Amino acid sequence: MDLAKREKTKTGFPSTFEIALLLSGIIFILILIFTKPADHNYPYYGFEVLKFWQKGFWELLEFTMQMILILVFGYSLATSDQINKLIIKLSSLANSNLKAVLITGTVTLIAGYINWGFGLVLGAVLARKIGEVNFKNSVPINYPLICAAGYLGMMVWHSGLSGSATLKVAEKGHFLESTIGLLSVSETIFSKQNLLINLVLVVALILIMSFLSKKKPKMSSFPLRDSINKNEQRSGNGYLGAIIGILILTLGLSDFFLSEQGNLGFFDLNFVNFLLLGIGLLFFKNLKDYVKSLEQGLKSATDILIQFPFYAGIMGMIKYSGFLESLGSLLVTASTAETLPLLSFFSAAVVNLFVPSGGGQWAIQGPILMETAMQMGVDASGMVLSFAYGDQLTNMLQPFWALPLLSITGVSAKEILKYTIYFFLCGLFVFGLGIWVLIC
Image (cartoon, rainbow, N blue to C red):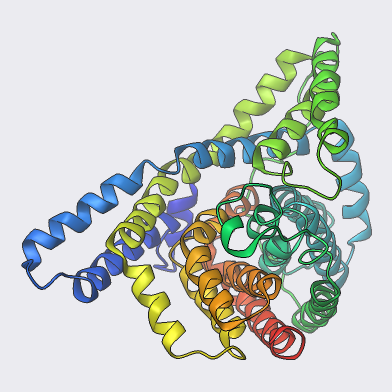
C-alpha cells in the first residue's frame, strides 16, 4: 500500500500531497483578499496570482533534486553492512518502549544538530529498525511515538551546524552583507545563548519523551512487510566503488582546510550529498550493488518529487504578490526593539507552515527583518537566531519534511502528529522563554 493511501485508510486524514494542495488554495484566497490592487478586479488579479504560482512552481528544481539525492543517498547508506551493524547494536539496546523512544530521540537530536539531512534519514531508519526488532521479539512498543522521536532532528537543525540563515550570514558577500555585515558562527551557532537554549531544549524533550512513554503500549501489526536491511545477495567483489568513494571524500573534506578559518559556508546540501555519495561508494565497494541500493531508495522519493513544486508555487505567490512584505510591515508597526526578536520568532514559525524551506524563507523574510532590526538598534545575531528557532519549531506541525520519515517507517502523518504536537509545545515554551530572557 502506498503512503498516500495508507494515510487515508480508516482515518480519513488527508495525505501530505492533499495538504499541499489545500495550503495552496488557502494562500491563494488570502493573497487575493489582502493584496488586490484597487484598479484590478478579482478575476483579473486571480489570474495574475495564478501566474505568480506558475512562476514560482519551477524555482525549487535544484533544491528538489538536492532533497531527492539526500534521501536516496542516505537511504542507500543506511542499507550498507557497516551502518546496518551500528543500527542493529542500537536496536538491541532498545528492548523496552522507554529505551526505544529515548535512544531514537537522543540519537536523532544529535545527528540533526550536526546536519539536518543526516538526522532525518538516520532517525527514520533507526526508528524503523527498532520497530522491526521489537516486533520480531514480541516486545510491546509505541511505534508511532518512536517514529515521532525519529523526527526530532528537524527541531534543532536551524540552530545547529547546518542552519541555512546562520551559515548564510557568515559567508563573505552574502545578500545582506551591506545591511548587517558578516556574522561569524561564533556569534550565532556557537554563541552562549544558542548553546544554552539548545541544551535546555534537549533536556526538556527527553523529559517529554519519558512522560509519553509511560503509557503501556499495545502490540500491533508492523506496518511494513519488507525490512530496510533485508539480506540481499551481494557480490562483494570489485573495489572500483571504494576507490571512487575515497576520491570524492578527499575532495569534499578538503573544503575544511581550504575554506577561511571559522567559515562553514561550504557546509550546505551539496556538500552533504557529496559526502553521502562518497561514503556510500566506499561502504558498498561494488558499483552494481550500490546502484541496486539507489533503486530501492528512489521508491521513497516520490512524494518529494511531486510536492516540492507545489510548495515552490506557494512561495512564488507569497513572494511576487508582496503578501509577505505586507505582513512584515504589519509586524514591524506593532513591535518595539524589545519585542522584535519575539515577533521574528513567531512570524518565522507561521511562515514556515506555508514555505517549508529554511533557505528560501530566509531569502524572503531576512531583508525585512534585518533592515528593521538595524533601524531599531536590535542585535543582528539575536534576530538571526530568533528566526532560526521559529523556522525549525513548526516543523513539528508541518508534515512536509516528514515525508522521508513517513516513507521509510510506514506510519502516517496523523500517527506522528499526535506526539510531535507535544514536542512543538515544549519548543514553543523553551524557545520563547530563551529569546525573552537571553536575546530580547
